[in-house]
Length: 146
Image (tube, rainbow, N blue to C red):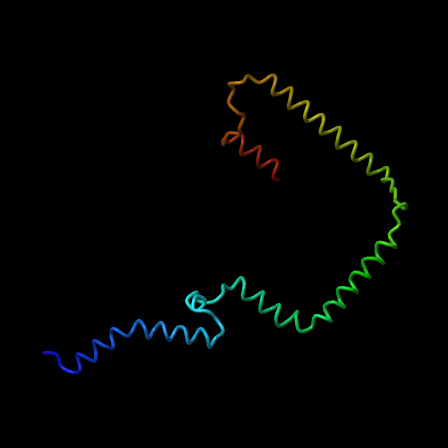
């Protein structure tokens, strides 16, 4: 035979899911959300922050922002109306710079030709030329570094 305490406990356990549902509905109504939104955990950070910024920074002072936008539009109009499309500047380079450029181009062409000739004269299966670590190499290296 069951005790009165056990009977009350069984009745309460049967009612627990219904009470939870009722609690969710009341909270949703009080907080201005539907029951699905309560279980969603809230909005994500990517939608909450821009919305909060819009509501607190932009929307209350929308007339000031509209005024700033009008000023920027006016500045753009003035800037583009002052821009003379016919005036272009032709700057002739310094003759010394042109001479140095031509010298560099000639040296580059010489090096490219020498490299091409060397590649033509070298057999295809020849190993690459690398300096060996020897006494001769050490003296040559010391001479150039001194």
